[in-house]
Image (cartoon, rainbow, N blue to C red):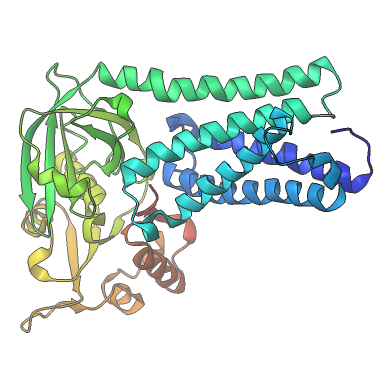
Length: 410
């Protein structure tokens, strides 16, 4: 395609270059580099990855639409037998990008198995980017000098190297440090705790509230890892516990895992936890369902450290008999200055505690007068987290003191 056809044409070409640049950044956003994600939290980075993908796709579609409207002759025939290979590559890239984004947004509605979707997502995204780069280098009338061609070729090569690191080098490093399943412990509420120990005596140094990617029964090269919060105490890094609720295909198999099986951990990740706010006069935790897992890590760690600051836990569940860790929480309350507020959606007749969802009224009844000075940690289903954030804002708690772990981002 030739350059210099006026503003509309130049704008369309700029959209194409910008869209491809944004789509390349997507590989970095999902590469799980701890130092890069630490200022924001990896959950926020993954959410940004999702929305940036939609925006980048819109820009690429706008590029194609403008060319179709204002310069259809430049597109030529869509017949791959006649059209230049780089034009066919561009068309295929656009179709693949649409498929990648559509499947990602509709995965839960379509009930696609997570592991199959993840492999498909990675393959289609990589193929689409390679085809788009081929199209750019072949059709790029604006790449009229060697340094421009070298710049974009180098840009593409950088992402190839990054993909190779993420898919080959990192799994190789993980494979060198296997873990062994020491026990599988049943908890209330269809929750199973996977206890892992290192045969070599290695330790996973983590901060309470962080999570790791778990691979079970397969090589770490298989792209079948899943993210789970670490529930054990950070004071005991030689023994890692992951508490997992039966919610999907993979999580339903945890109860069938046998002691002695090999597991791999990649991590830790995340910025959800008290260690980043050590000067707080006290902490408040709000958990919904299995959102208690990272908070259990925090409470167990604080107990092992001999913490004496005041703590409050709001714990929402549907049924009392399914409240995971309720007996251990009572034990932790005796070791800590911890007040526990249970809220049930379907309480038994004799229930005297809070009923319904954790909202402003429940929080106001149990928070101390100096609530604006405390640090708050929220983990649970997204509707609960959003509702509690609004309630705390209404109670005068500064947003900077409210820290939410996004529950459904993977």
